[in-house]
Length: 329
Image (cartoon, rainbow, N blue to C red; front, side, top):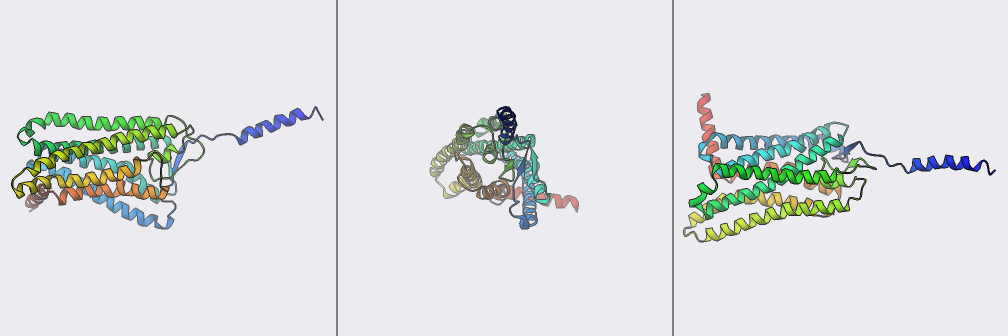
């Protein structure tokens, strides 16, 4: 009996080790809208149509600003960059989401997930900084009109634009590196339709509380500081506009800011709901609903707002269409 006991222990040990094995994840599965199988075709049609309209709207704005010389000002240059940024932003998430709505496989490789997160966060952070820069442009135009051409000369605008995107992608690089610094184990299911911070971080093998807190504070820095700088710009703008004697002058000054303010409220509102939380407070399906709004609906809203609420863009659009009709006659 005593001689037989050691072999029994040696057999039991591997079995125990087998039970405690931690399987490393080599690819993720994006859950997406798999819980709505009957609506996948409808959702594909709806999202695809919205995406086409968004692309058309942003390309139209970029083309009009490029073609019409009256719009060759810093304000509309930044608007063209914003439209280009929105187009790139949607390219990162929507085509992949549309493909997964039609396919049975929802898999995405870990390098592919990392790349998607990097570009999504980089463009999202750059968007915050770009809206801040556009607020500064309105501040200079209204509060320092005589010095506007000097303060916002082309070389300055180019440097500020480069700083915006360098800062945005630097933040994205830090956050992405933190999230992918350790392997993933256990579940491979990402409770989202793209690789966002919270659902991917939950799958990390290492303790993710410290990372989540660091990323939270970095998000606070990006979102809140950008928003506070925009508010500061508009505080000076309001103070300057109130001193304008004529009602028509005040109306014109405010009208140049209305479209920008609308986009700021929507963009920062969505960013606050999703990213200014140490941990996800809502259910995954609620987070996905908000994500649909800021990845699909908001990019559509921007060209619509800037086209309908901006008189100069509307006039330039009509002028360009009239010119194109004259060419084809």
